[in-house]
Image (cartoon, rainbow, N blue to C red; front, side):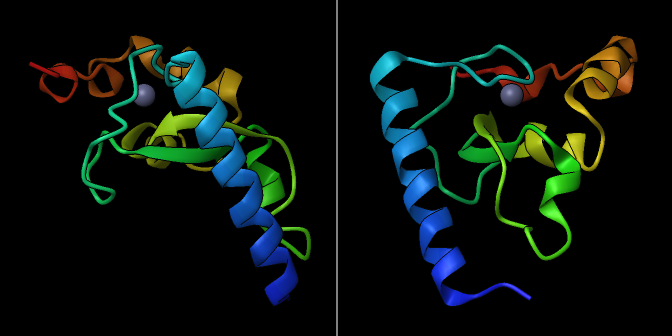
Length: 104
Ligand SMILES: [Zn+2]
């Protein structure tokens, strides 16, 4: 079960991550493309905090673990795969985004 305190710590960690990533111009760690910091928070290209260890997102320590910035859509496509598994699957056409990365 997740406590309110854990949620607060997670939000703070996420805010720090985003601030640092934005300041350094960090790209999505899954696809390497730039993050659109001004994107609608609900859009696919909006930043999200991706857990490096996807398994850490479940269970009592659900909100712990290392975070890295990724597009919402990349984060959701990765799901419970490890980063290595996800990147290994990137050669399939399904996993290769095209229009999604048109930032104009
Ligand atoms: Zn991405």
